[in-house]
Length: 184
Image (cartoon, rainbow, N blue to C red; front, side, top):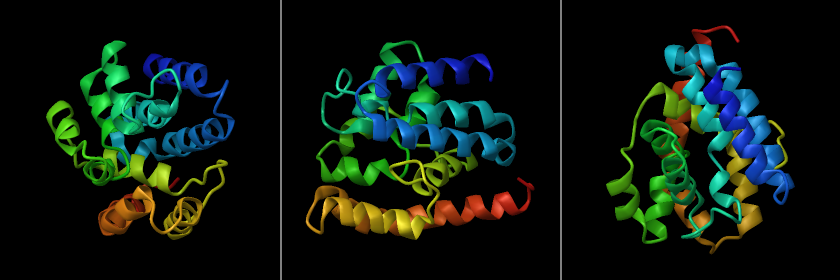
């Protein structure tokens, strides 16, 4: 592993492993999947892997502030010397803009972190949204179904996924197409 990825993995383990065992299992599997996707994003492979390790650190009790893990994690990353691009990938991972809007935090997310539309952000969404909460491989459809079942029909998370699903599916399909051009 390169230095950035190593630092990201160590940071995620320190923040998540002690108290969020299930989340840590998910993060490890997302990072492994992102590592396999590195050829799909070319020179962005290392930042993809680092973002995968760090994408859920905002759930850590020591970081949680607003209750919106994407924003909390990204803010923490900036305060601790990680670059803006990495923090922005974490801030916006997996259609987080939709969740931010549901939480009334969309204006903060947009003002603080530029949203990137790229093969890298698509691949991060793919790695996250095809990995279950215990690290198991799932189709994106099964992952969305699992989320809806876990949170229930009226929860904020279920509501935001209803709006975000078409955008997420496009990102997943673009990544699958790119994977077809790069034997894994």
